[in-house]
Length: 528
Image (cartoon, rainbow, N blue to C red; front, side, top):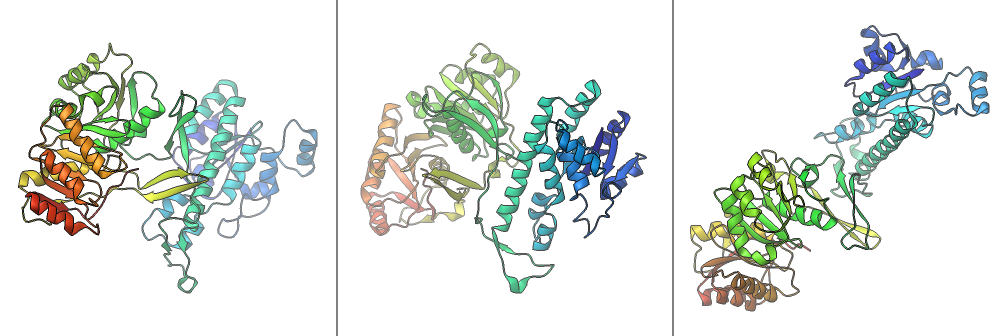
């Protein structure tokens, strides 16, 4: 058996090569890898000795040769192939260990020049990977250090790789080539090329949205069905999911997550991550129906639940602090589909032990969790895709523009910032009443902002919550004064809205007439 080793990332490669040598596998290698193995006292044959042709063009041409690709592509069960190898003095290569030039890491560096990006486009590596992966029945193709252990385990056990492992390695290899080529395409088609500036130091300007958009995901699991039972579905994650995102979570107990569970869980999780103090978010049908901050998870949950106990039934609950026994006991009194938190105490897990259907998700949050979010958002449309930068805008107190005679109190300003965070996660048209770090009424997803305002008031009344002296956040401007009148009639004394309507002055005048404070945020939060 012969193995050809050519790696850019040399993590673990010496130990692997030593293990292969101990099994009697002949080692062939290239450039820096060959030098490293030789320094470790391993007998290694340079590729140039195999091909009879020196590496050239600064290493750009070394493995692009029939004695390499013939050894990889020849089918051992085809006499004509084997006869051709014998006629041309080509030996088979049974194991290929390759990882590619670090193109993705290179272009991710600030100030990456076009020359550096181009130089880190691997040619020989992908060509060998494709050859070996195509001939998977005879050749094992290893493209990642995480595969080393499985390969060595089978070689030590039986002296060869199983069909199952070789096929899995082949699939992984073609996936890697797809990812690599996609990254190159994304980069090059985003470059605003200026020939007059071309030099070795040329750092091109890049468009935010590339000419071709190539996105790669890895399947997490197949789902029982999609949004409805007649639809099929699966859950995928990014190749490198952001720390603290839903895709990094671990399910500790409960039934399998459904399509709707995952969609609603993401809405709850992203919302609760926007708070830097202990918070709880309850989501139903993609909308927050209760949000609150508190001194601890129990207090935050108790306040959030009060907003809309009816909608909270069968909801998705998220905490941004570890769940303790007190919070677990409170939550366990209601029917909950999914409960998410950075961690659960042993006592909390014991509380849910008997509730075997409750899905518990542990999602570890990084220290800067409030600022770790997706950079892009996508939405499928007929035969196409909408792509936009994610709505990661964070409103600061200094951003608020007070436009009325009445000034908000410090307490109202704090509640306005809280309400604005919640409104960002409520489907438009969104109206959110808040007081003392707690939602008091939420109106979501209506065709009319006026109807959203009315629904928020109706929900507060149904929950027996007084809206007197509350603040209100509207995700977009009030096009007429009627929506403002509804929230003021309900008891609001302070309102936050983006501003920007042709009738802004009419709404400001109405606020002054009603004796309430109003601030403009200068930004809207449509969420469709």
